Amino acid sequence: MSKSLEELKSQGVLMLNSHFDYGNGYHGTVYLNPHRLFQQPATIWRFAQDLIARLPIDLVNATEVVSGPVMGGALLAHTIAGLLDGHRPLSHPACYFAPLSIDHTGAMVLRTSYREVVNGKRILLVDDVKNTGKTFERAKALLEDAGGQVLATVQICDRLEAMVDLGVPNIALAEYPAPENYPAAECPLCKAGMAVATF
Image (cartoon, rainbow, N blue to C red; front, side):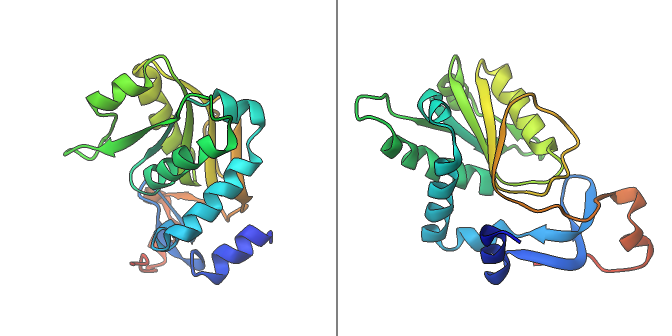
């Protein structure tokens, strides 16, 4: 296990051997609970700095907007957007932040004021965890629909379970080859009567 994963496990962020509903139509036995990380802003700042250090310099310099889905992705994106400018010359234009929200129907949306921010801009798309990649897929479609160009996706932990290829580089601070995910309707944990973990 990498140092980053050991740190996540020791902080009670990486949880194993239970029954988790990922909220994206899939269940599994491993869950990365990033909400524990966000309770300590200094920890997120450190992980954000570590992520930025993994980015190629041309990506750092090309990024004009950092975006991420609510809640953890947006918080991490905001932190990265703020810190990114510290890795570029003072003459470089400032980085913008454009969060993706959830509307009253539960759908991911890019609010009108942020559509103007991303239009014609190069975007770094950030989330706390990459599970199936479906969240990134929806987010990328929204940003491109608003006229933005997603350069890469970035996350704290990639569970190596992506079901989609977004056609852009993906950079993770840690990778964890998690056990198989199951479509909720076919979940053997549900069929065995194992309760879904609650937090």
